[in-house]
Image (cartoon, rainbow, N blue to C red; front, side):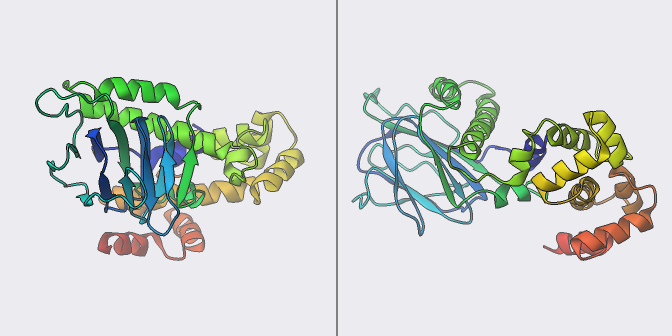
Length: 314
């Protein structure tokens, strides 16, 4: 397990998908949910994404934009479109306006066997983003990020185009997974963009020493790790590991481990409401519930029981 895989753990497409296969100008789809993370990509044709409070972005075939909530956005044929906006949300119905098809689910070939060869096909994946684990990923992203065609996501889009073009059992599951794959490809490309300023956890993974130490910690966070054992497993001295780790991540290895354990514990406290604090403590590497509670309060600002109570109240 690596850092990025862990941070994506709470980011999954689960049916919150919208398909438009017969968009003919003029059109205006207003996405009002403000999902924590929304991926928008054009399979064929072109249009404009207009995020609230941000400049319009033109999308051609295989261009992709990710919008971070709670920002809402509109997809139009051109800025200032004369089309009446269609309100689109998780529970929206299938509007019958101007040849536009928009619904939960996917391919709608239109009625009467019309020619859709000039249509614009937009694919949107809405991601709920649950828990504390993915917060670090979200904090690294701007409100709007763009990745142009020609990257590693293009083959995924070819699969998406083929799947959208047919209605078969299990289609929603296939599309969910393809959208997850597309999101990972898009964010990797954006994080590695020339001249970018990626977060420390992203660049640190590529260091041969620190990257290996991170994989060990994330692979088994409950293990009784020491700096000496991490150094031995990475093939360097304790001082070398400690210095390189602090230089790249801004904190010592065991401080990073403690923060990560408390992040995991925060999600376990909410997701496993029937588990005792002692059980959660053992799951993240603490045999003593009291020591765990002290560490949790130091990092999170409240004790585990109070954290769970407040989370349940929200």
